[in-house]
Length: 413
Image (cartoon, rainbow, N blue to C red; front, side, top):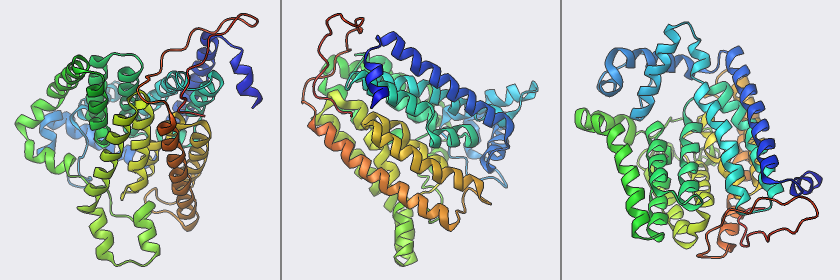
């Protein structure tokens, strides 16, 4: 690819600047969408949640019924975020724009993060393409700029934890990032065991510092809620199973095959815990075998969670997007386009939770693309050299000067 080869001649500062510019353009695009569109029903729901949090507080909100609203299933840090956003809206700022800002900013950070992760494991040109791919990803633009929610924020913290632990050798900061990820949205809980396993593989001092960072932040954010309203937190957040629509993945295929409603109900009920357990086991397995490829293991685990998900919100498509680029550029590009088309069609319909036949078919194609990409990505992780954590590549020398060798055992195209 010509662009990729051209990037190889740049020094790392120029490559990073290109990704930074693309991320800035992506952020501007998302914010323009947020400022000029009403967004889906979640925007109104979050506005009502924010008002309720202002009345009851981020801790007591879990024990209060909210007539006319869905269950408040967001972890404690989300409540503090809503409290702050509501305060800004009372100063005259648009809440509809504000609620979509955290996810849009998270995508900006994620583009740079993916570049830094990939450049340690592949050619610099590939790293630039992956970073730019996250910045302009159709599915991320749709889910962050139009929908909002907090999925992208949770994902960037999860990937940051893996990067800090495996690449930056900063276990304390990695533990804090890991705790932040599940404090914004509980979804990344499936990668927490893999992070602990990778810390364990790093030795006792690494494990202790990672656990200290994780435990301190967790106690600070979750402690007041666990002490005050533990049962309501468990019912609203820890046991939340998602919606009951038959739009995506396994439940969609079960519906098409005409399986009994009892089977689908079981899948969306207690069965979803089994699927989550499969994701946890897969992440732990990859982290144990290839601790140096931890960001890829985290990306693969989050992608597998979406693949096996029995829920079907369009914003959930965010879970696999950045991680797919960590696994490989073509995997990320294919998923971003397929899932992006699904999101655009879904948001263009009469309801984001009632997909028409075309959206359902494109969604099934996106699920298949994700499955193929995950298989290729996991195979690439396992093909990497074991017990040889990637080292930061040297700054690129000018053209004509001798180059240092590139790290072997690439986990990315």
